[in-house]
Image 1: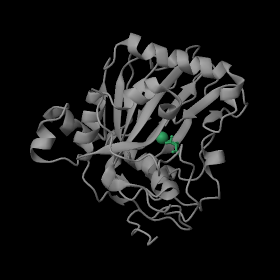
Image 2: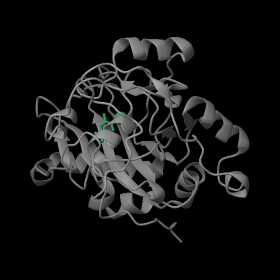
Image 3: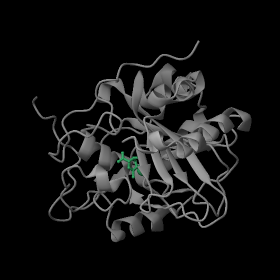
Image 4: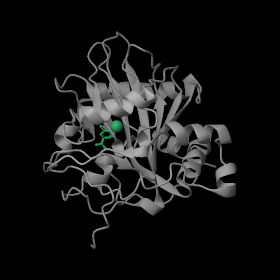
Length: 302
Ligand code: 6CS
Ligand code: FE
């Protein structure tokens, strides 16, 4: 397969300065931009910040069963041994479960919720499919954190995602408060690509999903972006929704509170942005991390 041009070189031997993203943030134009679920001020906010928070988007009783399903999985030894289930370093608690939309009909239906799908299509300018879905779970007292990173930097290097034309919809399955490790984002960071130093090891995901070392921007670059626009950590009740651009820098602290924090992520990718060969030159990652087969346009639930 002819390799697609690499417009976002990263995982380099030597440091390369940051540079502007090449794609728009909101890809739809004209009527398609105006007639989606997000209003003009919400689109402007997403364009400016690289994320938007929609408090109590789903009623709590709609998301509670999803958290119960995760709890049931955590107690099922057979489920815990699946490759899509990432345990924490101590192998005590579940850290992530990938491909939830393939494991559960209820999750699959939620990916095609007309409002969610409509917002993804509005932001990405047309038809979309699920690149990746996951639950990131932080048990009380011991849930681990996630270092600063751009998801796109990983999906470009290790999955072959050509352009910045994907968006994450993160649905809070539990309350997210200041103490249980909410997602932290740097507003405006989505506009700059931060190349990272360090070659990608083979099968990097076996390690990176527990603790990411490769693809973490250097501290000077993180500091300069944070100094220009600060850091925000949206908090709110279960059922709240965070939409964030594939390239918005984010991280989260360990959960030292007694309360669990579990968030469900659906990553929508444009059908115009299907995966090519990984730009890091590594082997493609498994289907549950980056969809290569199940990548046809989604249609909304009727
Ligand atoms: O490698 C990935 O696809 C995952 N890694 C991180 C740190 N965030 C995005 C995604 O879940
Ligand atoms: Fe991430």
